[in-house]
Figure 1 (cartoon, rainbow, N blue to C red):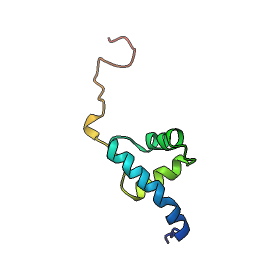
Figure 2 (cartoon, rainbow, N blue to C red; figure 1 turned 90 degrees about the vertical axis):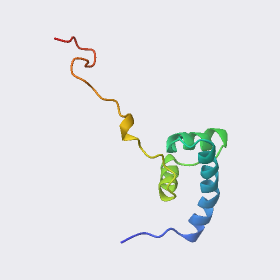
Figure 3 (cartoon, rainbow, N blue to C red; figure 1 turned 60 degrees about the vertical axis):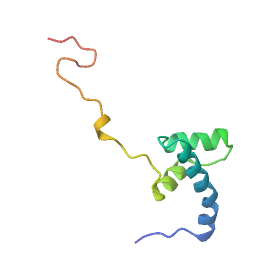
Length: 84
């Protein structure tokens, strides 16, 4: 079972998605939280963070994670403990 978005909601989201696309073109590595902050505090648009995430996910605008950049931990170099 899937839910369908109403036509009025889709029309209301069109301008937001267009603005998100222009921000992503200027800043391709910004995630949904930074996009939301720019929309909220720079553009003055009252929008929920979850709505930005949902729209970016639906339009494939999220930043893809790079698993090769994950920090690795090695033995002997633990967090703040004395090595023995």
